Length: 413
Length: 82
Image (cartoon, rainbow over all chains, first blue to last red; front, top):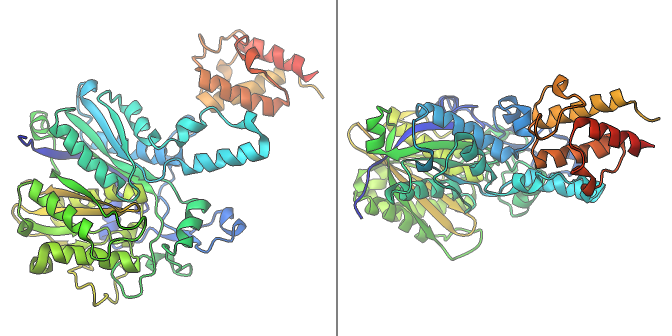
C-alpha cells in the first residue's frame, strides 16, 4: 500500500486543566492539577469511598446553549465543545461534506443519561422516560453530535475499547485517510463518567487513589507511593487530513501522524500482562509500520495511570522495546495533572504529544517526588526541550479488556 | 383548582421554550407545532411527557396526532383537567 502523509491541522479540548486546548496545555506546563474534592450531594448520599476527581475545568453547560445540552449526554457535550474548537483551529476547512468523516471514541458512553433515566423509570414509571433517552445514552452519541454539527457525511464512526478507545480512534482515522475514505477526519474521544456508579465500581476493584485528603497530589505515576488513578472527564479532538489537502489550503501543520498499532493481551480482563508483551508489540509495530526506527523516538506520553501494577508493566514494555535507548527518551505521565479521562485519555494525551512536537517542549510530570527504583525512566519534572531535527513521539493507551493502542507522531519542520 | 386557558398557554410556552429554544411570545394558540414552530416528533413527545407532569393530566399517544396547534393542546389540557 502506498502511504500518504497524514497531518494534524487542528486541536481542541475541554479537560480538567482548562476549557480549551491552549488552556489545558498551558496549565499542564505550569504543573497544575485538575483534581479537587467532589461537592455533589451524591458523594455523601452513597458514602463513596473516593470523594474527589478531576472534573472538567469549565462546565459544558456554561459553554453550550441549554437547548443543545438538554438533548446531549455530558459525554456528547464535551465532544461537541472539543470538536468545534478543533474545527475552528483548523480554519474551518472548506471540504466536501461527503469527504468529511468522524472517528470518535468513548469508554463508557452516556452513563449519566442511562442511570438518571433508570431512576425515572423506577420512581415515576415508563411514561416519564423521555424519548431522547436512548439517542442520548448510546456510545455513538458523541460522534454523532460532532458529525451532525459539522455536517460530516463521509461516515461517523465510534470505537469502544475502554481506556485505549481514543488512541484507537486516531489510528482508525489515519487508516481511513490512507484508504481514501475521506479528505478530512475529526478524531478524538470523550468521557463524562464522574458518576457514583463508575466511582463505586472502580473503587471496588482497588483501581482508584484513596487520597481523599489531598486530591491534587493523588495521581502520582511512577512514585513509590502511587495508589491508583484519579477519575477525570472531558474530551479532546484532532483534525487530521492528508498532507496534500493541508498544503493546498495553506493550513498550519502541528505534526504528522504516522499511524499506530493495536494489539491485545488475551491475558486478563483488567490486569495488564506483567511483562507488557502486548504493549511492547504495539509500540514496535507502530514505529516499524511507519518505516521508521525506534532510535528516532525521543518522547513517549505514557499511559501511566498511577496504579501500582500498571505503571511497572508499561515500564517493562518500554524497556523491552527501546533497551538502552530508553534512557534518551523523555517520558511524560500527564495523567498526574489531568486524571484519567478513560475514553478521552488517548485523545488528550495525543494532543499533548502533538503539542510537545510542535512546541519542542516535553510537559512536566507532577507529584513524582520519590520515583520507584523499579521504574528508572527519564521523566522531566519541569518542561524540557525536545531535540531539534526530525523526531518521533509515541502516545500509549491501554484498556480493560487487554487493549493496547499506540499512536506514532512525527515532527514537521 | 383548574387552570385558565391563559395559564395553560403560558405553562405550555415555558415547556416549548425549554425544549426548543423558541421564544415564549412566539407560542400562540393558532400556531401549528410542525408547520409554524418546526417542532419534530421527538420534541413533541418530550413536551407531551412534560405537559402531563406539569398539568397533572394524561395525553394518550393516540391523541397526540390530533394536537395540530398550540390551541388544540390548550383545549385538550383544559378538558382533561375537569
